[in-house]
Image (tube, rainbow, N blue to C red; front, side, top):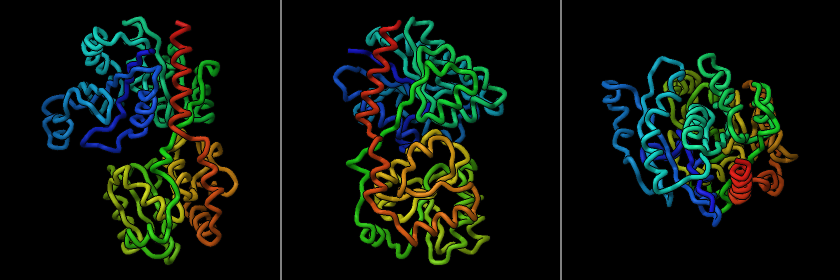
Length: 388
C-alpha cells in the first residue's frame, strides 16, 4: 500500500465548511481505495501577534491541531501569514511550521510521496520537504494558484521553480496545462486530472418542486462562488437586472459582499436579486436543481467544480470561454458567452426561452466522477514513486 501525505492550505474546517471542499472530496475518494493510505496536513495561515488576536481569527485559532474530519486524519498546524508582502514569504513560513510536524508524522507514517493540492504556497513548501525527507512530490494546479500566484511578481519565480522541480504535476484541465507550459514548465511532466462530482448528491430533481420549496416562482438564475472580483458576480447582477421577471440568487461569501449589495440596491432589484451568503455543500444541490440557469462570469478558472455540479443537476450553464470551459461544454449544455452583462443577458434569455433537454445537460457531466479521479491519481502516484 502506498502512503501519501496530502498537503493543502485549501481544506475545509468547522469555521469554513466550504473552503476547498473539492480537495476534501478528492482526498476522501483516494482514501477509500485499498492501495492508498492517506494523512492530511491542512495548514492554517494566521498573521503575526498581536494581529492574530483579532476576533476575525478566533475561529481559526480555536481549530484543533489534529482531528478526524469526515473519516480523514487531518493535522492543522499554524503558520505565519505576513500581511502586505504579496505572499512572498508564505513558503518559507510554511516549511518552518511544517518541518517538525512532518518529522513526527514520518515516525509512525513513513510516507512515500507528498501530494501538494494547491500550487502556491503548497508546491514550493512540498518541494523543500520532499528534498529533506527524500520522497517524490506531486503538485496540482487548480486555477488561481497559476493564474494569480504564477504571474504575480513576488511569487511567479517560486511557482515556476516548484513546477520544474516536482516529480510530476497535475492540471484540472488541458487549458490549465497549457497555461503551465506557457509559464515555462515541462508539458511532458504534466497530466490532466479531471475533477469529480458526487452523483448521489448532485442529480436532476423536479424543478418546479425545488423552486416551491425555496419560495421562488418564475425563472431563476444561480451564481456560485466566493464574493471576490475575479468571480464576476457584478456582471451577472447587471445582466439579470435587465431581465424583468427573472430572479438571481448568489451563493457565496467574501470581501466584495458590501459592494455587490450596494450594486443591487442602486439598481433597485432587491426583490429579484439576493445574496444568499455561504450555502452548505449539502444544500447546494437543492438550489442547483431549482435554477433554470447557473451563470458564473469568472475572469479565470481551471475547470470549475461549480460548472460540473450544475450540469450533473441538469442545470445548463452560461460561462465565458475561459480555462477548461470548452472541455465541459457540449451541445445542449449551455452557452459560452463574452464576459459582459449584455452577453450574459442574451445567453440567459436564450436558455430560459428554449430550455435544453436534461439528458443533454447531464451528459456533459458524465466524464467527471470522484472514482475515476481517484483511479487516475492512484496510478499517477504509483508511477512517481516507482520512478524514484
